[in-house]
Structure formats: C-alpha cells, structure tokens
Amino acid sequence: MTFKDNRTFIEALKKTGDVVCISQEVDWDLEAGAITRRTNELYGPAAFCEKIKDYPEGRILGGPVATYRRVAIAMGMPPETPIKEIYDEYERRQDNPVPPVVVEDGPCKENRMLGDEVDLFHFPVPMVHDGDGGRYIATWNFSVTRDMDSDWVNWGMYRYMVIDRKNLTGNPSPASHLAAMFLGKYLPQDIPLPIALVIGADPLCSMVAQQGFKIGESEVNFAGGLHQEPVELVKCETNDLYVPAHAEIVIEGEILPDEVAYEGPFGEYTGYRIAGHKKSVVFRVNAITYRSNPIVTMCVHGVPSDEGQVTATMGTAIALRRLLRKRGLPVKDVYMPPEGAGHLAVVSVTQGGGEVARAVKEAMTVRRAWYPKIIVVDEDVDIYNLGEVVHAFSVKCHSYRGVYTSEEPGRGGPATPCYSKEERAQQYGAVAMFDATWPQEWPEEEIPVKSAFNTIYPGEVQDKVLRKWKEYGF
Ligand SMILES: Cc1cc2nc3c(=O)[nH]c(=O)nc-3n(C[C@H](O)[C@H](O)[C@H](O)COP(=O)(O)O)c2cc1C
Ligand SMILES: [Mn+2]
Image 1: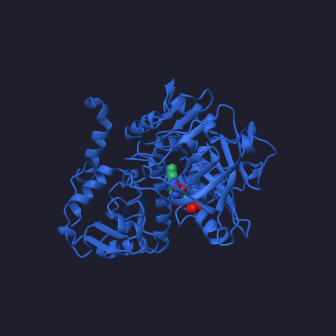
Image 2 (image 1 turned 120 degrees about the horizontal axis):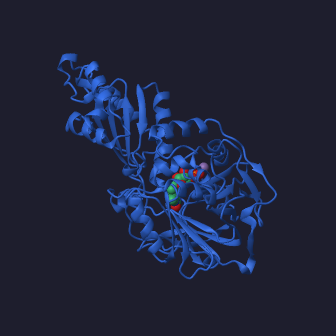
Image 3 (image 1 turned 45 degrees about the vertical axis):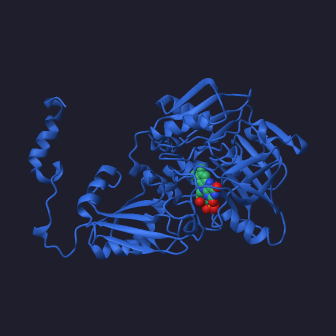
C-alpha cells in the first residue's frame, strides 16, 4: 500500500519508529533545519515539527525520505528491504506508468487565499541553513507547468525562496524542463508562464519530480506507476493546471518574463554552499490553496544524507544500468551511493578488464556527466556494501594503470565543489574511472585468491559453520 498524502505516510512512519514527532515549540529560523540536518547525518528518523514558533497553524516535516528505510515505506515495502530490491521494484513500477484521474475537489482546497489575501508568510517558511539567501518555502516540492505548444505537462523539483508576501524566486537550471518551457518559449514571446507550486504532495509524487525524464514525458504517469494506481488531480483556481488533490499547499502564479530577482545562495545537494546569489526568475503568486494546519515538507540538503541524494541517485543509477545494458556491456548492476552526492557511480561487471572498464566509462560520458567518478568492480563485489567497494577500489585498482581520466567540456555540474568558480560557470566537466577489475590478460593461476568466508572454505565447512552459528554463541 502506498500513501495518498504525507499525513497517512507519517502515521506509517510512526509505527516503525521512522519519524520523531516533536511537540515542543521549534523555531522556523534555523532550528527546524538544524534538527533535520542532524538526524540526516545520523541516518535517523524524519523530524516532524508539530508546533512552530510564531505560527499557531502550520507544521514542518523535515527529511521525509532521507533514508532508504523511508523510501521503502513510501513504496509500501518493509523498511528493511535491501536497496537492490528497492531499485528493482522502482524500475518495475516505472515500466508500468498509470495516467492520473481528475477529481472535483480535494483536501488541498480546504482553504483559499486569492488576490490581495495572498501572504506567503502565513506559512511556517523555514530558514533552512544559516547563510542561505532567504527563507525557502519550497525545497521538497514540485512545480507543474504546461508546454506552450503541446499537452506536455512537466513536474520538476526546483527550490523557491520567498521575496515578499506575493513573490518568490527560484533556481531552475538552464538544463531543466522548466527552463526549456520558459526560456525556450514564453520568455522570447514575452508571455508569463502559468505555474503551480505543490508543497507536501505524497512522497512518491515528489520523488518522480526530482528524477530526470525526457522532454515530453509526464512525471505524473510515472508517479501513478509507482503508486500502481492513478494519482488524483484537481484543477487550480486561477489557471488550467492540475495538481495532486491531497497536497498540503498549492501556490498558483506566473513566472514573469520582464522581471528578475536575486536567488540563493543555498546549502546545495553536494554538501556545500557555493558563495553568492545570482540573477533568477520572479514567480508572482495569484492564489494559494491549502489544507488546514498544513505541513511544509522540507529537504535540508547537506553532508549525506538527504532525500535528494537518496532518491535522485536511485533514479539515475537505474537509468544508467539500463543504458549500459542496452549498449551490450556485461554490466551486472549499478549503484550510486547517496554518500557520493550524485558524483559517484559504482558499476559491477560480469567480465572485467581494462577494455570493458573503458567502454563503461565511454558509455557513461555520452550524456551530461553527473557522475564524475566511476568505480568498476568485478561481480563478486556487493556494490550496495560500501565497505566491499572501498576494499576492491583500494587493493584491486592500480593507482596508475587503473585510473582513466578525461576532461569533458560542457558536462560539469554547476555546483560541484572541486571545480573553480570559472570552471563551474563554464560547466567544465571531468571524469575519472577507477578500474578495480582483474586485467583480462592475467592467466587464471596468477589471479590472487580472495580470502573471504565464501571463497576460501570448502562448501561443507561453510555449511557446518552456518548451521552451528547460533550454537557457537554468536
Ligand atoms: C530538494 C531538491 C531541490 C532541487 N532544486 C533544484 C533547483 O533549484 N534547480 C534545478 O534545476 N534542479 C533542482 N533539483 C534537481 C531537479 O529536481 C532534477 O534535475 C529534476 O530532474 C528536474 O525536473 P525536470 O527534469 O523535469 O526539469 C533539486 C532536487 C532536489 C531533490
Ligand atoms: Mn521533466
């Protein structure tokens, strides 16, 4: 069973100890962010702040899916499900998208603010990190926009900061689908882009909104696939967009073609804040609808973990696995550990050697290189076990012959901390591949023998030890 909203999701998290409900007053100014940051770093439960300073109404849910346990629960799976099984199930469901249904009414319409009544400060907007450019109402959120010339509707997760009661500014990257719609079509024609910003939709809807699909593909169908039933959508008050009926807050407005604002800085998904704010878009708010005592969902990006690192790496790794297999490469599996903050991919192959490892690197650099570090390992390594990956990397990757690097102009991440300011501005990119597989040309008898329980003991000894394990006293 999956969840239509965050309220039922929180109830499920309570049952397994995956949320802490904080009844003491918490300050929207840094305290809620700091609590969430700390529990994220401890891989601890979500932080549900039920009473916010200065706000008789409104709550904050910090870190809704910042652990794989909570991703599993959101998917309707047991919390201890191994990551590989979550990946596989996620992929299976995405292969079976389900279109949404339109409903007449929904909880997100319980309260309305129109025109002059609009006040973004009515909600407990958190100051997420010290040093951020302002208060961010939208972190774990998504916006709904429609292409000017087609039926394509895009859901995308882009952060938004409050400028004043009626205006927001955000940070859709030039490569985002929102930018494709706005910069590509609305701006050149000087037409405002209608937009609905959804805060506190159910966890699976939010997860698909931060995953990279192709232009023209609608995230809502993939969300239906993850739910294995249609997402219920309801029409906005002031435009023709449709939003999840069970969302907590829906902010309707327009991205203006003739105004700019300064956005950021913000503590980024890489675990670092990059200095300075930059010119960005203005989102003028025309209406807000919301549930009574609404819950603002908050992602506190930073040093792993956060929900972006957990769920974005999952979507990307699944897509990569598919791409590599399609190329006919002997790829067993791909894992992107959240600890790599999207910059590290681990690939296991059924047949190693420099040639295969280089072909893997090649195939992974044809698209935008969001995985500047690649470790290729033999299939005996459990890639979901970071200890095993570090071991193979450390002892099997030749520090000179096993390292392949290349510069990849135009493919870099604008927030990658190791790039200089100039390199980030130019989207400079570089890739390093670490081949931790045995060279193909080594004769079998020269390959070092792995000293592990399941490789060096005869089967009958292993069986005996496993059988008597508890008896021994372990
Ligand atoms: C919490 C969070 C905040 C994000 N903020 C931004 C952002 O401000 N700008 C951006 O371009 N991408 C941001 N992303 C990444 C996008 O959600 C991701 O690239 C997604 O694919 C965008 O949707 P699109 O492919 O439809 O453009 C964020 C991701 C997360 C998890
Ligand atoms: Mn998209």
